[in-house]
Length: 314
Image (cartoon, rainbow, N blue to C red; front, side, top):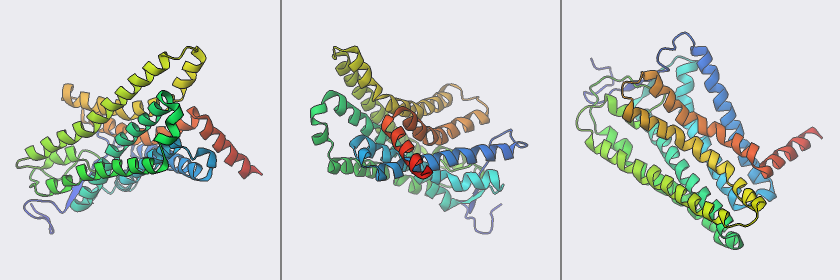
């Protein structure tokens, strides 16, 4: 039966769900999500403030890091309204158009993260393979152009998605499987011909994740070749150590994506809770881990944090 504002094709609202099978522990789940959001928002905001305030961090590597932190804030803030409403206030409804807007921003920021990680791998490649021209290759104007290019690419490739979803009738109910809106989730309740959505979705995934990850692997193959050509072992280890933070960030981003893809491909009978939890890991873990990784592994970031902390104590 149609609601008051429903059409025969689209529901006025969609119903979000929490984590299947965890009805009695919703308070603990809400607490965990709140902690994840606090770590992500405070950690990424701190890195942004640190890069802006400290002249020593006005270098290409840290400009890319500030892009990553800004993007991770975008990921967190895109999911925050509906996740907190679902788990903290047990409000599980979201307007259809609001759902499309959230879907667009979640996917856009996710694809932007892949592009930023690729730009950061290029930064490491130039720093290790061509250190004498590092400052002339990665000028401020080029870094800005790279950032705008990543934004433009993600925005333009994802822009058709809300309109592709909007044209579809929804006759399989209005209950989604997550506490936020994702394109694959919306396709499970849409009816009609969804081939265009699926084909374009596959194209976008290959065009972004596929191309970006391949280029990242290529850059590290070239970096490894350059490092192995260094005679002194101490210098080799020092060069590799400058890449460790980025490698950890790449693994934190791509491992959950690969895991989700493998589960969808080879374990289709997996319980719903497995799919939901893996999607949560994919969206919530990288924004939380990245500021921790760079704070622990990067000496200049640690030094800046200690400097700010010491100033606050005096």
